[in-house]
Every structure is written in C-alpha cells, then in structure tokens.
Image (cartoon, rainbow, N blue to C red; front, side):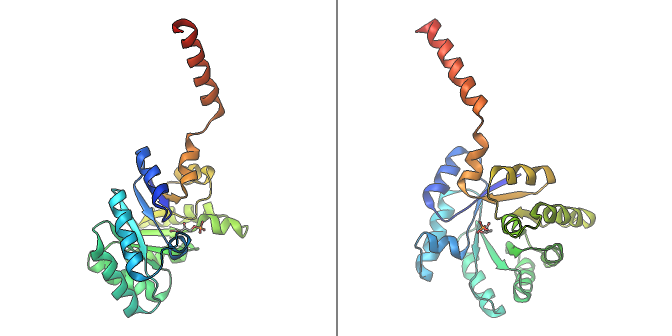
Length: 218
Ligand code: E4P
C-alpha cells in the first residue's frame, strides 16, 4: 500500500519523507490556499518545491472546469516536473480530459469521487489514480469504506489498472481499514501516518527495557 500525504505544508511533507515511508503527495486548491500559496506563478513554484522534497508522485489539481482550460492547465502542470500527476475533478470535462491525458501518457488522478459509477468512468477514461473521498462520505453518515470495497470489486472484475487512492482519510483506523480492503494508496494528513506508530504498550515496554538496562549498566 502506498502512503501519500495530503497537504501542501512543506514541513509536514519533509517530516513524513524523513520517516522513510512516504510514496507521494496529494494537494488540492483548498490545501494550497491554507498555506497562503496564491497566484499561478507561486502555485507552480510551490509544486516544484514539493517535487524536490519527495521521490514519488505529486498530484496537482487543475482549476478550470472547461475542457480546453483543463487541457491547457494540465499540460503546463505535466511539464513542470516528471513527478507531477494531473488531478482532474469528476465532471464530464474532467473525464474527457482524463482520456486525452491518458492517451498522451500523462498520468492523472480523478478526484471528488463519491460513487462506484464515477470510479468506473474514471477507470474507463484511463485514470492512473481514482480518489474516493472516504472521510467526506463518513461525514454525511454514509459508509465510505463500502465505496472503496465496491470499487475494488469492480476494478478486479475487469482488471482495470487504475489505482484506488483512498482520500479524505481522517485517522489511523481509516488507514488500517483501507489496507484490509485492498486500497492501493491512501492519502491523509501527517497525523494519520505518524499515528500508526503509537501504542501505549510500546511506550511502557520501552521505558521498562531502558530502566532495566540502567539497573545493570548504571
Ligand atoms: C484528495 O486528494 C483530497 O485532497 C483530500 O483527501 C480531501 O480531504 P478532506 O475531506 O479532508 O478535505
């Protein structure tokens, strides 16, 4: 299972990268705005910085919703750095743009996916990644994990190569449940990755080991 971090915060990205388990980064316009990155030049420069910090794929989202605009923006993003994956919203023009980019060998991430039908369309358009938003479904009392299972079943039935990127992950249980279901990738905040480290018995066990060592080697 690949671990992506869902942020545009450079220090969080560097911390996850330093742990040695990071496979990539996802961003979105809200995450860029949260870091105060505005204006197209600054946004492109920020994507470059992110690519230089990590070794894996970096999803960069288009803002346009018309087909020509999506193609223009996506092409500009794709040439920025070889690690960039063009992130497209799940709307008709996004599906068309996904097909265009996949025919050209440009990697894509179809985002804002909330149903199995949308995921099927993304795969048929040749998406590299599909991003079902687990947490946002849970927020409206809908079973987000069930969506991931449905997509897994459909993709396996037909051998679709599109990778399931479980997005909108909020906690470590989401990560573990996605791993059980067979999600290819998860993307979440730094806490969803570092939280996996934690167990009180690890802490108390280590404290005891060190205490006993000191007794004999004081
Ligand atoms: C996916 O690529 C999105 O950036 C993301 O996971 C959205 O998560 P949120 O629901 O926590 O905003």
